[in-house]
Length: 115
Image 1 (tube, one colour):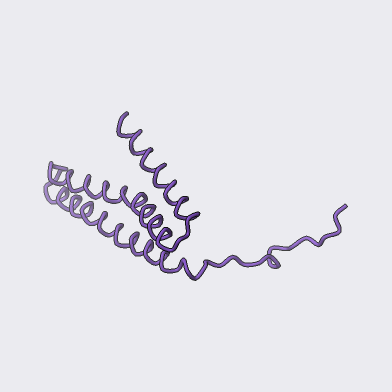
Image 2 (cartoon, rainbow, N blue to C red; image 1 turned 60 degrees about the horizontal axis):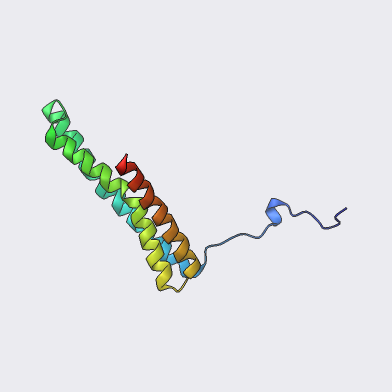
């Protein structure tokens, strides 16, 4: 039988982000905020064009497609930015993890594209 006391959730140590990672989180959040805005803008314009025309024409469809592609490009772009940022901080472990995530995302795109 184990005589060690069991830690309750309120007794467990809190995990805080390392202060050195704060600039990376700031870059990633800014990238996400700007990227969502840039991706949604053509979708909104495309939908507005479709409403004005009464149907989804060639121009509206192209705008909507462009916005969707821009939005879908955000996760690999964030993984790339994270990998480069961690590498610049000489944090090899996190750089490799972010690089691995990027490789998986790019392989998923490649598989989807070839089917």
